[in-house]
Length: 492
Image (tube, rainbow, N blue to C red; front, side, top):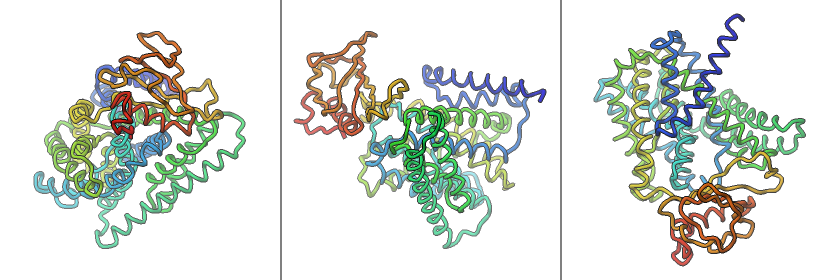
């Protein structure tokens, strides 16, 4: 009890610095997860000297944080936005995982001299993209919704098959004809459990008369956590159950939905901060430097061979343009998930697991710096960046849920074809209107004769029923100008 004030004070200070670091990372263009890892390393043996070396506890807390991150990702994902990308997203989260494990394992068996089981274990650990990185980076990167949707679906689902593969290889289970059936069962059962909890939770929350508004967000997140535990107890994929339950809940007409999404977003940030600081605290800089070569070799294999090949094979049935395939190959963001997965064989006492954990730390840092800094420029070079994208914003002072209304914020960037278009020429569907225009820091209510300019910011009020149509029209005018319909631009 005497140390409680010190522990709480240290935790609060770390959290406060981490929150400030988000703004700093955006300003300097450095991914925030690296700052969090750095904070953990600074607190650890190489800095303030806090000794922490408990892989079992780190793995457990890491999985708990991942459940929170997947819950936030599913709750804030709009089904209409990811539905067109469902096919390629599922292919990337299943076929691409299998291909990546095989290619990475074979390459590292040859390059690093690892035995086949350990080489494939490396491949399984590195096969999963990171949900936290995708959800926090791509949604604000100005990338087309088809690509963002595919990557969100992939990162939300592919943790499940990668986790199954890591557990099977770490436990030394016999790999025979029954293994594919086991994987299919775990994924299918996880999907069913997630759908059941999502639908049932939505029905219960709509009928519940809770005494306080703040209880609804807590109950919603609790449903997602129970879905995870139920999946694990049923020997199914709890991670998949979590994401699917959250996706169903997030796209249902929940009471106080805006409050729930705000709460989930804050919880997701808290999980990310805690997870990365904990992993940085667990890391040993001296061991990491010793694994530098192995980490760089594995990173090169994943980035330049395994990921591109897995994307190409997954995209074959969907006729994805080569530019989008290049972007999908480069956008396989890694983060905390591979580190958490690498802790599983370490906790199980697998020989060589410590070298795997240390190499994964190196790989995550290098790939995050490389991919995080070049993702948006690559999208521009490939012609995939969007100028004006609508984003949902949270407003707590207006009963939007009761009104069936939503707010969209649109920024008109340089090069947008919306420049010079009169407000009347936007021809937004009935039920959507521009309620506020901010120009050079001054806001005013526009009329039909107001002419839009670059760097304008628009606040669009729309009913839920016509939101998608309003977004499509805004994207169409952004791409093709006032004659978008005549040019065949639909805004899809």
